[in-house]
Length: 577
Image (cartoon, rainbow, N blue to C red; front, side):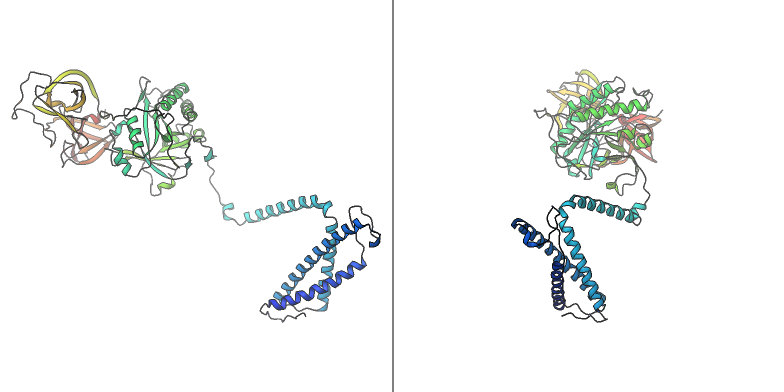
């Protein structure tokens, strides 16, 4: 029994709603029976008119019966869905039912039923066209929706700066362990950092080290290894620091660049190089440079040749230069290089509060060397610090897994020794050390007494001698040695007694402006061993101080810097002309 709806909305009663559906369903079936008796239908694909059911063959009866059952079933389902929809609408809207509305409703149901029946009889013939039409309609609808949403989506209206078209996934990478998008932190080092304590470095938590493996001599053009490269790679690997490498190039042709790359890949083959292999070229504008007459296009082509050869050998290439040289293709064809290779940018004194996001640089930047004044445990003096906007899922295996020799540190890396060949003895007695330092990083191996002979092979301008004694290469303070093998032992009152508290220095006055060759510590006293000897400041290349005195015997200089009188090793300074 139908239930009239009040003008006001009532709570929805599902039982009453189900009863209404049942009543409507019976009315639909009655009307369907009347419709079937009054109309002829087209059956089968032959298109013949059906005059009477009795004239059909048994096969036609089965086929026709099946089609009719399918059609009527589909029609009834459609009828029921329409009825439910109408009842819900009427229930929600609160509209009253009347006989005219009821007549209209069933007229619509009957028309829908006839249409569904006719469509079912022609479904096979029209299936392909229907699918095509549906796809076209759906696509048109999506496009219209997209166009409409573009008018309201704020991002669609935002003006964006157009940068270089770079597909980062296409930047060449030869990683076998899987490169990821982690932000990782590291340092880059060379012999200029001296002997590094890599165990202490590892304790700081750095992820990687870019290690200089060699360079091409700026004057002779000879390729030379960095004297601490193999030791640095060996020790970094030992303490779990991932390794990258770089080469300082002065190549003047693509052939030389390929030669350099081949030398590098051969030199590093026995080490697990996980991070990229870099091309570093600086000072090409200097009058003394081999590259001074090269054009920017030529230099860029040389760099590309090196990077390409590195990639061919199975390593990931990276190009290093300063921001001033890279930006706007100022000194390099950056826009070409960065399309294919990672860029390692040197840019100091920038905002590093959001360092993980990278520098405020419009070009591609895969690695950022953001300072050369880093302090890292295990490294005496300052060091370059880097952040890479990528990492690796593991550590690479060396290309050459054959057994390699154990590398030793180049303890003379920060000193220049003049080669000599002469016999010496101690004036009284002197300690022979494993490295030219009186600091905690050196060890006294033996004490040389007056009358005992050692072979001196080198003299440093920093006040040290290299000697061979009992088959070992050791170091002694030069002022405690003499070439007079018959000299009597100096008594304590006469001797320049060796005092572990520091050098007994006297300075010759002078007045000249100096700067550091690279970086040098300025101390409060001329000693590296006294407990009260403190590094007060650091002088970097380009910064100046006034040297007011020097001691040639021990190799110390007295300088005035920022209003203070300080002391540093003379060999780390150069006079500013």
